[in-house]
Length: 300
Image (cartoon, rainbow, N blue to C red; front, side, top):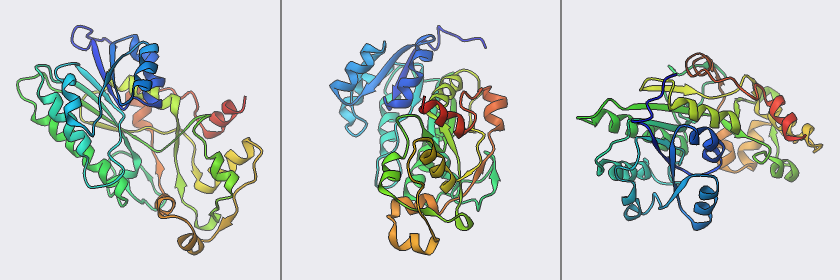
């Protein structure tokens, strides 16, 4: 697909973590990449990888001044804060970007499929209304709404393109629940268990890169693999791959009285994701089409 390098030669990465680093080799082939880094250690890592680090913190507005007019495109991987309402971090970033002469014309935001809430195990696509139930997911809904509104309000500019990538459980060789399995944390018995979806970190990174070029604005996509697993089956698969004991199974009533709320929030939701839009519109070819593929690669 044709890329206008003159108008999209500089990319700003917000949320300079694992996914963005995995995407960096693709991004460097198209952009001069700038990355907002919170620490000197992170800045050194990004500089060594070929990007231009900028020290700053989304929770400290004064540090964001150097972002003004910096880039024509933004890859936004940073989550909202871990508590509170809405997404003040996005609002602070918008204020910094608004102050510049150049307004980003392309923005890819990595969100979560948690915005759909509990779907009772139904198979859903991106037209499903968002009915987030957890505080974490409600903050993501607020962020999605804020970015849609901000880009609509831009005037005197070529129309901006916002793409929202809604992701489920992200995994990789170094992003697996091994500690949970070693601790013997239980899972729900099969009769009461819900469906969960996954995406390998490398496939998500590739999706983020493609989304900067291959879609018109205003689109949301489910970014997930082709697996269809219940949550307990996911833990069983990881345990089997690494020679660990499978987690004990308990009833939902037992879980409600013994497990932390942070874990129960995930257990209370069940949905199966349709990823046709990802394949047909984004053109993403999954490297790890199923969890079994990713786990096999992780154990090599």
